Image (cartoon, rainbow, N blue to C red; front, side, top):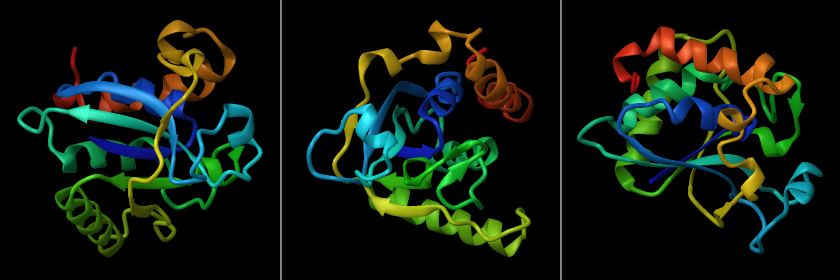
Length: 174
């Protein structure tokens, strides 16, 4: 299991549902207060929680590094506490690992991308152990799949899914 925060969980979930070897994707909240938060509370920015997706994956089909390469391609890891028009600590970029291997791979990939200057600004993605994970409310699960014509989905999620399909066709379920 690997947990990633890359802005709105609707968008991140939509992409990772398409990745071969990802067995389950769940939108949720992590690394904040020690009591289960509500979406409304998280939106205030006062819970310390991040909107995340929890990935259960088969390492025989997709590696941690490949998942993180997708992650760094579909969001901006150089903007602190924001992704596009979504602003607040709940939208921060984060990798919340559950194994030492995930931690090592994340740190090595960030070092490599920084050395190669793949981005115009420093990477601000936090890399921390997973703490206090809770699933988001049912209406957030599979949001893009259920509401593909909703404005936010058309403007933000659909382009991320399209970028994944173009960039990572080898990892696509299709």
